[in-house]
Amino acid sequence: MWIWVQLAAGIGSRFGGTRPKQFYRLGGKPLVAHAVETFLRIAPESPAIIVLPISHFAEAKRLLTHLLPKAALHFVVGGATRSASTEAALHFLREMELLKEPYTIAFHDAARPFPSEELIERTYQVATEKGAAVCGVPVSSSLREWIGETSRALPREQIWEVQTPQAFRGDVLQAAWSRLSPTANSLFTDEGSWVEAAGFPVSLVAGETTNLKITYPIDWEVARAWLRQKKKQASYK
Image (cartoon, rainbow, N blue to C red):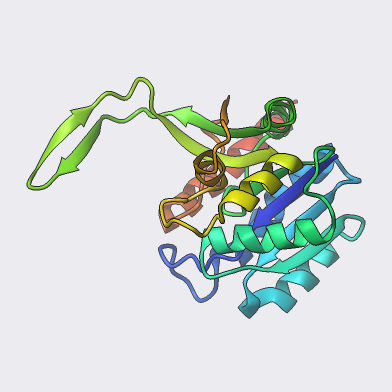
């Protein structure tokens, strides 16, 4: 069985605004709802765990329950950091006895509204087979490493920008957690870096350039433009 964990507990300080960006409406629905809806089109009977900030917990729970009345939604209070929210989800998964081999669990940033069904399926399939998989795309920019008062160029041919979803078999998550907490090191900025540090290989899956992350206000405008383009393309079919 596939299980979806939607990480939506961040405050979005770089985005600004009067509340976390995941609760603003994009294309008529809150940002937090987009990716989980895509997952549920693939696996409508599967559970989706939504990790929320305590400050907006009740509001978001009402909103998502109304938008997705037939879904098996579970709501968890997140932490002050991404890794703390991951660990909160792990506690819930363990209580539900889901950290086992028959289950493959994907973690996804609510700030990425547009993962395609194909990308989600591809990531789950590789994780189910190999134990752990993250998606990403090759970097397109030139790279430099800052060294004191100078810098040096870095080769970009083997460097990829990591995205979500990131998926893991339940037994791999349990074993990694038993060795190392995802909060043990501030360098664990995603689930893949934590699982790898715990001693498990992580496969890389081809991501999508349209699987953009909304961090700054300009990203919101790009997302709106992409939605308009998708609607225009759909109208031609």
